[in-house]
Length: 336
Image 1 (tube, helix red, strand yellow):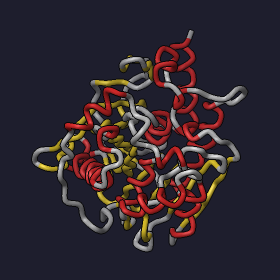
Image 2: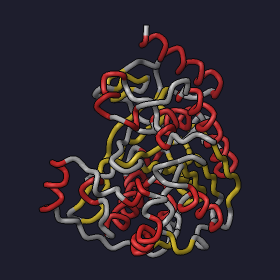
Image 3: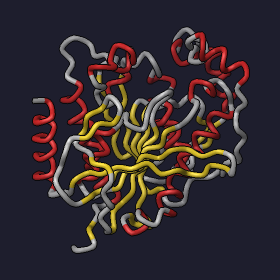
Image 4: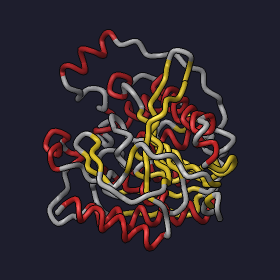
């Protein structure tokens, strides 16, 4: 029954958008000669939809099929702290069905790096490398437009997307902020203290990789969408000269808007739209988790009584989709 419902929903989206079946595969991006990250690419393929298993996820996304050639915008996705490349698969599917290719980075060792100033540099460098890896891949080079690239980021991923687009940041600003506002922004300021015992033990011997990052933005970035972003570390966003969309939770307890999203909104030079929800559910922007892992995942997978995450995401992701279409246009296939 569940598999049939997933296929029916996917077929409805495809009918509305006139799009192809969604395929996926992982590629590797070189951040430095000694550091590589996995990038999950979502792209259009031919053939019928079918449900496939990816660990605990069962999704109408196929593996093992070649990407259809064309001229499609690319959107890169950066997940939140400790997240996964699957966290925004509903947005990825939606964008592919509208004529996009999507590349979701798997940022490694987030929980081992959090609280270290170099974590911010690594995040930016990893998302930057993901773009370059897609264009360097022989298969995707025939599928993506060379000049139309957007970025989406959630939470810490929102910081990453902004940094990739040229946002100037300084880790010391987070330290200063927490020295002054630790009680008012308590979850953010305690991010590296509430970790599991085993993670804290690993952090004692973990060596942060070194990386050099460009001070500016990636030259291909042309549009930016962020949701519940981390913003306390930014010193200047004047160089983020691309259209931007912001979603925020006015009651967000994880990244209190006064210090993060609203601060970003005041600094962005080309903020096209700012959408606010009165919810206090930071993790509502994540695609729902499979029932089998919701308890082990904890708070990010839980919803308050009466809240329909799928309904909420249908509205949010639809809005993000239309924003990217207005900023980047839509893709075409090689036969169009």
